[in-house]
Image (cartoon, rainbow, N blue to C red):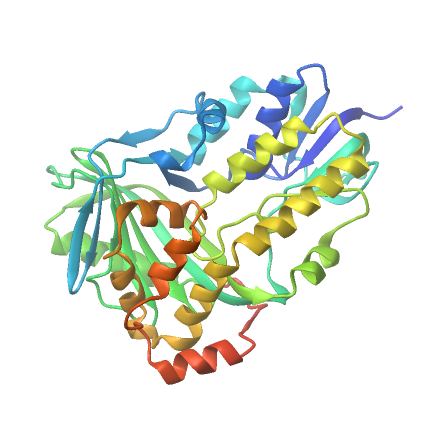
Length: 394
């Protein structure tokens, strides 16, 4: 007789890992397995969030993870506007995410190097041919491109640098958009990890999913040189994330979903469509799944499906803004959209990143002189948008 678990989670990234931890805490008697194709949980990423993004329960879920915390606020830099904001910032490295899950989850739950070939409501089949039965299957695999969704791409390369002398950055710089734009909205993201260590990420809101790693490395080196930093690279990560501006969400979910399989994570549509900030959404969803983990699988699948559609409805405003960004703003001038946004009140900005903007927030963001040409804005609203089917070329 083959292996059997109460719950099998496929995909050991942020969503899958947090769901596994939350279920383990809420229902320690349930047998659980977290299947990850790679040799570590979380991949090679860094996730960040503002202190106010999480509920008390969310903070408790993340409490075991070692993370970097800053209490001196954060900063943004644009050609015509610079500002220091008071919100404190947090960041979690995937290597610390991996170490914590290995410590917190039972050994039998840690199914690393386990590529899943296919799955259904009653279990999974590994690439080795082994069949693993499960009462409930939760699909948290990575999101891919889809003809059912429209938008653009957030492309980035980040490096953890060690500088020969103190770098002088004392708070996170969320966006330094004073850099050359290169045909997209480009900004540099800075996280001071110590007096002589700093994480530098070169990020683009681009029409193409192409990632030219050598070019981005050169631009980071040039940025460091311009700051007077003599630096050594300690670690590097890259990413290509979809920025969703529209589409047929029901058709998208239907194209991926197996009957009675719980479809969650970014693959299930649980993302901030514009900023790609994932911690608040992933934490909230993990807690909701854990609360209902003992339900029959069809009930849990329906519950998460309803949550996905409600999340899509609630985040329509951000997709509208993304549509303006990609289809109305001239690529080299997309920074003006964010430059204007960062003149607004701090509570509004924090709610925006957490995807909790109020009706008044939305009115305030849309009021005043638009940062894009009116004719292009009208054309963008009437257009269908570019399908998210480009290949991720590295």
